[in-house]
Picture 1: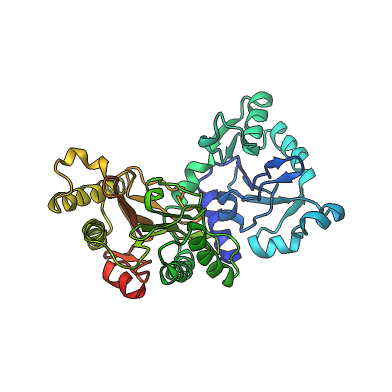
Picture 2 (picture 1 turned 135 degrees about the horizontal axis):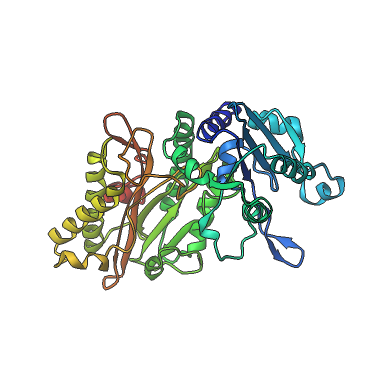
Length: 415
């Protein structure tokens, strides 16, 4: 993404703000892990979506005057020679401007005085904050909540409004550069999954599969996956979010991978399931065909104009029919015995992207996963077939179609 992308995103945000208002978006702070060690920093995706900057303790200030003029400032940590020796150099103002396109910068210590002056002089009557409701009651240090409390206590006449609601709407439709980045990420995801398939054999440990995947990403300069990889085998496939990687995969077991690649800030999310020995059993084929047929149906069916909230129901309904026709499911009311999770979620700057589709129809530029999971505990078979669907003007495209999906193709690769 270039500075033009971030400038357009900010302009779209500002157009949704009231006159005499301001918006504050925080990159976030590091969290302490232990005595003198922090968890790896991960910037607020809304902040990155608006600036491209991934540095901690940065703040975007956007102000809309009474006449509609825009003033924006990016606050950054000041240079600190000693700290930079230990934790790496900080962005300079020219570097941050080149990334974000924000022309006005200040160091972080100027933020609080500038905020107090703006509020005390009543230059704004509304402040928009990016409040994550999922942090309520949690132990997460969240700068926006501190600012919210400060304003409510000190300036009770100034209204607090949600920037997150606006950003969810803006992030729902992907721009062409986001889609191109996703396509590149799909290529790398394909390489990683193929590496696991090609090296698969009975007796391997889950961490060995993970090592093959991580190595491919490292070859592309990516030191972390798009999200914590889910790679499991056998009975561990029945833990939907499994991160232990310590199990041994025995002859006849299925390997499940649910993995992604973050490329230029956007993230894929692809799942495949295959027998570690390279040969699907009759029962594995039966269940896999149900999932595959459901996935194919969805890619034939998705187009603009479908209630977006119905996608998940469509997946569940069709997969239910497939399982009944296969003789696996006797009563449609028992579908939750074999389908344990939803079948669709949007992807983008977040792997479970922050979007607003309630009451909306599908539109060109929406990108979401079609995720068909089947879990048959009695047979010891659990897997997901998950692909990334881009809604187009006249239908949809499977962005991850080049990652082998048919069981026949997977067997051929694993010969």
